[in-house]
Image 1 (cartoon, rainbow, N blue to C red):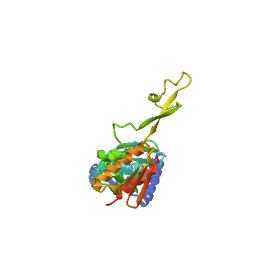
Image 2 (image 1 turned 60 degrees about the horizontal axis):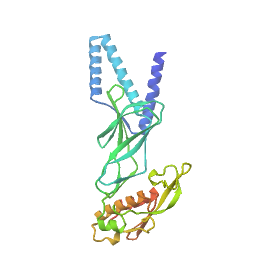
Image 3 (image 1 turned 45 degrees about the vertical axis):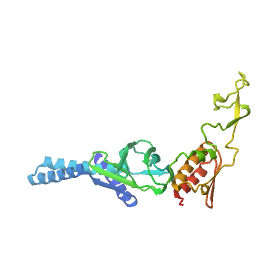
Image 4 (image 1 turned 120 degrees about the horizontal axis):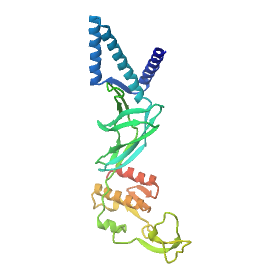
Length: 305
């Protein structure tokens, strides 16, 4: 009964191995420990046959069987894993950013002792105990542009440390590296009313207090125990029509101007202030939607003088 179950396990997994090798890039090969073990098995078998030593012959067969089973288990451990990711990542130049990836385990088995590598750099050892697992890739690039990612590899020597199993994924995504953010000179800051010494807010009136409102804005003189009110303010910047036209600033070096633009765009987006961005015949409207921000970042990553 045990023998039949073992043979069925070997047969099923061997068929899976052949089928999977045709449709994906899983590589299975012995490491130095595996090569050493294979040499030991060979000489143990050879000597046992030469001297007619049944114990040595049995030992070599048992070790060979364990070696073969480790191939199947190692393959099963890394099989049915899928890499998911965003189609586009937006990264600021010369800044270390974390790109988020998801590993999907499409089988019911746990995946143990798996190393994730990128550009020969080990990202860590993982045990995929759930259907969905997350990991981050640290990415840095000092030049703006649109880039592709290299292969991300999953490697494992599970279970006995004698077999290496490897599968590689080529992320089909773009990394948009936009210019590094630099605080503009004071003249440009003043032009857009950005100054630490200037308070952009003016008193506008009284409104009902809502959950999440800051207690610092509560109008205590108007408020009662039953109901609270808050002071509302006008934002002078929001009342203006802001236009950032790169063609106006020919006296600033182009790459530095792009870095200033990144700073201003981030500043206004975080404050939910609309801005019109212009360069040559290209016009973009920055609003409170992430899509508008990303469109400008993509343009800044690719634009030429």
